[in-house]
Each structure stands twice: as structure tokens, then as C-alpha cells.
Length: 586
Image (cartoon, rainbow, N blue to C red):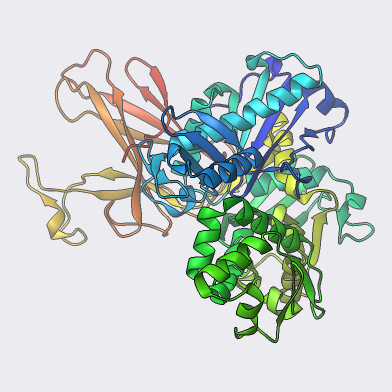
């Protein structure tokens, strides 16, 4: 695993914040960092083609040409071009992917060979989709840097790629290999955990740059404890930090969260429209009138971020694709959109004035209920992990943290808690914090393990504790197969770069290699590697130089406490060392 290169070689740190709904980047020169740590640059000109974007990031969507597998466009350009293509009926010539990052959270079969479906159900290698997207962000940033008059060589840039803290090691490795395929050298790449990056950024913000703060308080004060709630488009990612002293930030519990970000609200709203106009109308709007559907989604994104609390008054929502929606209602329902609303169960809560839909505040707020209740539930789950710590400060970051309804729901659920939010662009807190992490990776000094790690062994069979079905008969004695032997326990505080050494050895004369298989479980322990919930993280073979008749030993070092699991194997007789990343092949 890489550390990002020697610091003496690095002139710039660049971070890619690869999000579910929106992605962006930030960077700073080494000299700038040394003079002013917050002098961090980000692209501020993402444009949808018709208006300035709602945030300082681009939509995580990509358009690929089917025949050549080449990148056509990324972000807003991909959205607009796909809408144009759909209007001409040429969609079968292209792949269009959006909000695909969630597959690394929802799927267990993560591998280099896995495929994902585009918006129309056409499958394509997932690693190529991720690599093309990372590559598009990388190229856009390099163009931005060049326009600033900076001329840098690839070896002079350290890249930082952000991932959710609650992701598995396989998901992190998949992102690393995707970045490598996009042209970023493995030894110039670091992985940063999203809530940690945001926390580091807020450590550097002065108190007047945080909303909700009080005079004389700062998360950067020594001995301060706080919860980090990173609310993005797809997920909420939560952890707790303890600022022990200067440049010493410790994790108080393992990170966790769930799929309850801003896209949950989008789905609720679109399902609500479908209950009014029906499935055929919404499907036709999405598939045959893609530009209009895109306008609808973009308008709701603006409303989602800006709706105020309380919401007792009527909320105006502009339906830009009004003509298309009205036409589809006439086509499939034989009545105008206005009449469809008047005939629905929501007729007393919705009215149309021109192209504006006026909705009761409570009705529009109800679309946020599922996301808000799940976010509060996830926060409570994390707090239960640290009952001895009286946490009275929540740090909210991420694009969806800007939503006033979400902020209010958290405050109502935890009335005694101080809620802090970066005053300017909380959606960029992760990207900017990842830049700071790249400059100083040891800001986080210890982390809590999220799962139990172990290996597969064959001990002598013990009738008092072993499963008879696991018995293997042999000349030198009966053994038990598939036994899980723990070498790192879940929920253990480990300092960064803590090393656990596990011994392996040959079992046959002139054996040419030793197999190392790593397993994990989110339970406290497992008896066997095929127990429910126990999964193989990876397996690799350590070569034995000049195999001989005597038993040969291999010491495998597992380095914990970092953002990734690192593995180094040493053949004891020759001292030959090999660094491994676990295999993504199931």
C-alpha cells in the first residue's frame, strides 16, 4: 500500500471527492500549505449549460460510447448530452451511468470482473466506469491547474481519493485500483475517509467560520469530543472524534452509517408524483423526454436544499417540463395535468398556477421524513457505542447537511446538542479536508477497528469443541478444517501503523509457496471461516525462494490503524519481503 510518495518530491496535493450524487476536487501547493493551510483551491465554475450549478461539484454521471467504450462526457455535460441523445432515439449507441457509487456499499461480490447496469439496463465492467469517472475529474483538475499557470510533472502531485469510512476493505481497494487504471500511480495515491477529512478541515476553521458555535468554543480545542455526521447524496457516514491535543485526533468509535442521504428524498418525491400521474407517465418522461425529466430533477434539487423550517406556508415548485408532463397526461390519462391533480387524493394540498405547483409545507416536508428518521436512527446507534462519553457537539458536513429540514430534525431529536456546520460550502469540507490530510497524514493518530480479522487454520481436531463435519482424517492425526483464528478484534483502538505479525509455514517438502487467506466478520468473532457473516477478504501466495526439504517460515505483517489494511510478507530464511494488496477476485 502506498503512502503517496516522499514528501520532498511532492509540490501539490490534489483530492478527488467522489460522491454518490456529486463529485469534485480541491488542491493546494506545498508552499501555500506551509504559509496558510486553508489556502485550498476548488473549481467554482461547474455549469449545467443553462444556469450556474447548485453546488461547487458536478453530478456523478458519465456517458460512454458503446462501440469504442470511450468517454464522451462526465457531469453536467454527460447529463445534457444524454438528454439530447435520448431525444433523437440514439440511446442504444451509448452507456449512461449515474449514482453508481452505491454499488460498492450494497454489493458483496466486489471484484475486478463485476459489472453494473447503466440507466437502461445495459451491463458494463464496473471498474471501467469508476476509472473513467476518476480520470475525467483528474483531467478537469489538471486543466484547471494549467489555466492557473502551474506546470507540474505527474510525480510532483500526491493524489488523495475519498471514500466512506464505513466501506469494506474490498471497496476501498476497488477505488484504489480504479484510480490506478485512470492513470494515477499507486505510490502517489492515498485513501482518505470522508468524515475524517471533513473533521480535519473543521479543525482548521476559525470559530467564526462555523454556524452554531458559541464564543470561546472550538472543535479544535484540546480535549474536545464531537460527533462527525457526513450527510451526502447516497449515505450518511458517522464517527466520533476526540481532539487530544495539537495534531492528535483520535477516533472514539468505529464509523458506521447507512443509505439515507439526499437521494432518499429524491426517490420519495418522484414516487409521490408517480402516485398522482401513474407509472406510464413517469416512465415516458424519464425515457422519452429525458431533457424534461432532467429539468424536473434539477428544480427539485434546488428546492430540496433551500426549503425553510417551519414549513407551514405553501411551497412553490416550478415544474419546468410542464408542457411535456401535461402532454403525457393527455396521452396516457386523457386529461390535463391540472385535472389529474384535482382528481387525486392530494387535491386539497396541491394547486397549479401556470407552471408552478403549490404544495402544503407539511406535504413537501413528508418527503424528507424517511431520510431524517434514518439519519437520527444512525446517530443513535453510534452514540450507543460510546456511552461513557457525553457528546454534546455534532459536526454536520456534506452536501445534504445544508438542508434546513435535516438540520432541524437532528436538533429536535437531540435538543441538548450543539450543532456546528461550516459556514461556507459544507459540501466541500470533505474535499478540502482530504487535501489537508494529504499534506499531513498523521493528523489522525488512532482508529477503532470496524470488524474482526482472522485466518483459516487446521488445528488438531478437538471433539470437545470442533464440529464433527469439519473433521479431516490424516496419517499424523485428525484435524479440523476451516477454523477461524482471530488476529485482530473488532472495536479495538489501534494506533496508526500498529503491526500484527502472523506466522505461516510450509507443510510439504520443497513447497514452492505459502497461501495466505484473510477473512473478516462484523461480529465479535467466528468459529469457522464459512460461518454466517464471515467473508473472505482476499488470498495471495507468498513464494518460497529455493524450496527445500526443511520447513520454511513466512512472517506476514498486517498493518492496522490506517485508512487501508497493509500487508507485508517476509520469507524468514532469505529475508525477502513482498508488499501485497489483497485480491479482488472472489
